[in-house]
Image (cartoon, rainbow, N blue to C red; front, side, top):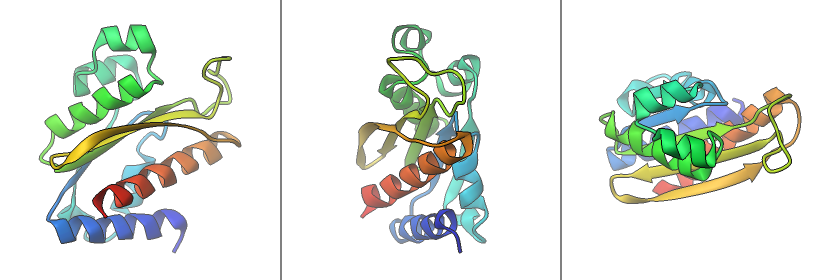
Length: 160
């Protein structure tokens, strides 16, 4: 069992213990976290839905991310991640949600936000909003995998 599967199984077990369902809002990972979760047999008992909102328009239309937030802070920001996770929770039947938005590369980085910059948020009906920015290294695949592992790990910790 790979790291994604182990973490997804652990998250599923923890969610089931709490009687919770999960929703996700993913941008740079393109549904990689949802794939890790749905690879687990029986995940429909604890995974409600995932939103892959790659474009700014999708973030606005599906998750109610504010155009002003996107213009002011950018798609890759803790502010955007926070609005993504809030929208995912609002537009689902989940008790906890997580979001990811970042620059997986190889292009798109800047001096302020280099390739590998990934912003996260998680929020639950009984859990406070938490945001985090991480700097990952490697190629596009490695950055996306590290982001997936980070969010799965943080969701497990939040429920502990």
